[in-house]
Image 1 (cartoon, one colour):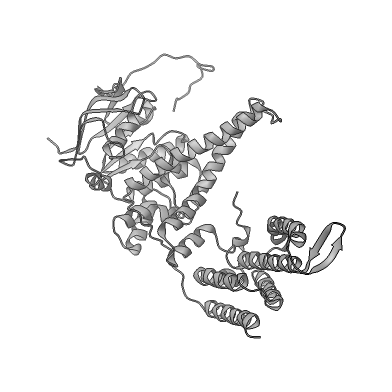
Image 2: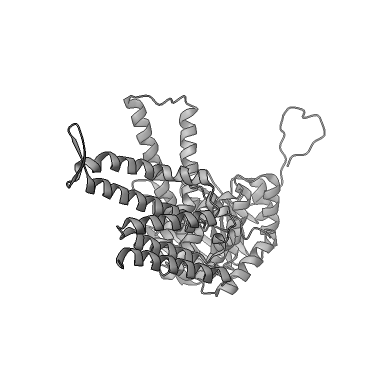
Length: 250
Length: 240
């Protein structure tokens, strides 16, 4: 389920115009993604940590959210160092650890953690529906924004339906085991969810048509200007200039 | 004779692979009518509403709304603006994250400016006694609140007619009373589907039933008494 604990804070980052935050985070992400110099990447990581600190994110929650990408990175570290060709760094029995392999792993790890933290600080600090309306103002295609917003709205309904089905299974004494009966039951459960979700989609669409929906959402949000917007704009532009200089002006 | 709002004649409809749900139905609603529709589950009441709104195309028969025949999708745009349909499940109707956005959705689609739409939405919420609900998150509302907010989303479009699909189901008695007061305070014609005779008798003038894919007309309200038995029946009591 979607938990939006970061969006509930009230640091100065939360008060910045969401459009600036989304554009800033995107620009930052592009620069970091195409950088390979370790000076650039460590600076970017430091910047990301600064953002997380100034957004006053809960450290344990940040770590909890980093867990999934960390497991993924672990997988890379387990495979890439010996499977990549290049200068030998170390020999462990039959395994040859190569320098480019380790370098690549380190780069990927730094970039991943850096971007995750930056997005937690800048983007996860707004609710999904604010994000939707923000993207709408940033001229993202209407369809994508609708999909995001409607998924967000109906995820909860679908979860309720899932819980209802699970309860219905439990009260009839269903215990999952490793047998065909359990697999079939779970397949029915998933199938039922799909059927119900598509039926629901049909009804929601009818309801929208009845209220004159013509394929266009109009957002009611307004984002008033404030001083913090300018400070943030200055800060993020400066950071990006620094990163670009470190990477390309040697 | 008062003006005809809609006139269905000889409507037939069957879901793919199913029997006829609507079998040569004739149904007319005139301005000022308040009709209750009571019938068993699966007898085609909801289908009938969807035919009127153009959500379902009948296999045969004619749909005439506001004096013009309605066949193509474009014909129904005006119908949907002037007739409000309240869906059975409020979760189908409320799809915006917050209440105000959902209520303003209809007026915005009708071409109102943001400012006007917000004003209409706030007025509608006030009228239904839902002040302070503007920024509530729709999926976190209780069942009764969801029903009233859905009604607000329909009323915000300022319809001339309402089609209400089981508005009273799943509501507690106080919310039901609120709903009865609201419906009786509206100067609109409506058709209301319900399984509850008490609710229908307090809100409508005529009650029709559906049977075998047809509508049985004119069962005027009769006051009658029952004998009935239950525990503690000798104690003075009232039934609600």
